[in-house]
Length: 91
Image 1: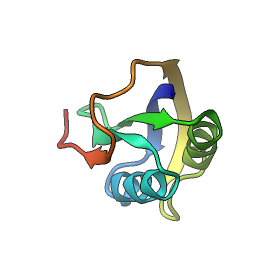
Image 2: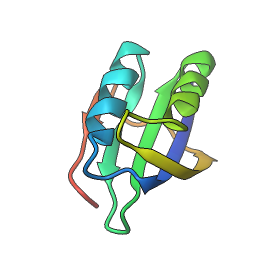
Image 3: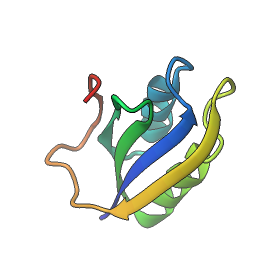
Image 4: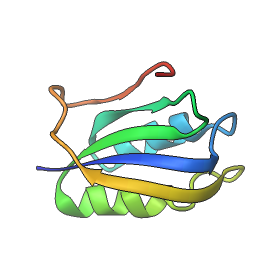
């Protein structure tokens, strides 16, 4: 299982980014979570097969229609302890 932590910056809060990530991740069969961060970015942990994780990472570079992605930090991470995709509160 491949796992990445993404921190997405730009106009990413208030545009449905978390719901969009949760929907796309579920479509791709990924596990993990997404949340807004206090600094205005969105953080996500995505885990699954390599192709699905890379596709989700690629999709996040554009985001939903109203978003403007300026940058994405990507790091390898440990997989979550659950097999679904969750939306967490701001943290």
